[in-house]
Figure 1 (cartoon, rainbow, N blue to C red):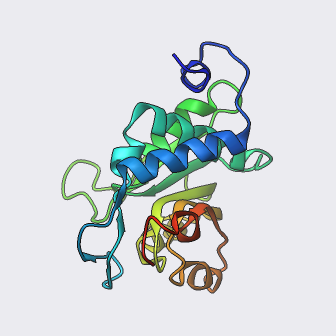
Figure 2 (spheres, one colour):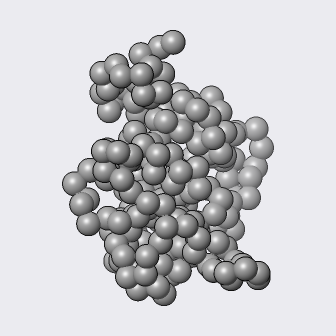
Length: 202
């Protein structure tokens, strides 16, 4: 078992440097999640000759652990953040991994925003450990123009929540930073498409 796996599995070896974790996560994304074989339709409505399907990375044991380590590091110092959340489905594995990583060092609860309100049971739009009027961080797996994550933003704001920042694994650099800034929101990305130059034709 490698040092990375030893540490991320909680066996107790010294943590790897953040730069090493990011380098390894970049390799996994390139191997498992970057698709380039044909033209793809994006959630923003546009088309692209490359596509990030992040689920094979965020549902991969090592990939999920690395995402959790890197994102948890980004949250350090955000003492007023009560929970982390995001829009189904892309944000779900990130939320779960970060919540698990946060225990017991700095426990952070999680929640998910449904694209459509439940038509049965509680009929909630937001599920999980969300408290109205709380301070949260939202996650996205891939951000293009910011439209998808804005669905989660609106749902949280409707419940009186304050959004400290939005964290995405990959920013495609197609307007999300500016669009979210216009909404008073900061977008923080682990990677951008610039990190995949030569692998993706932007």
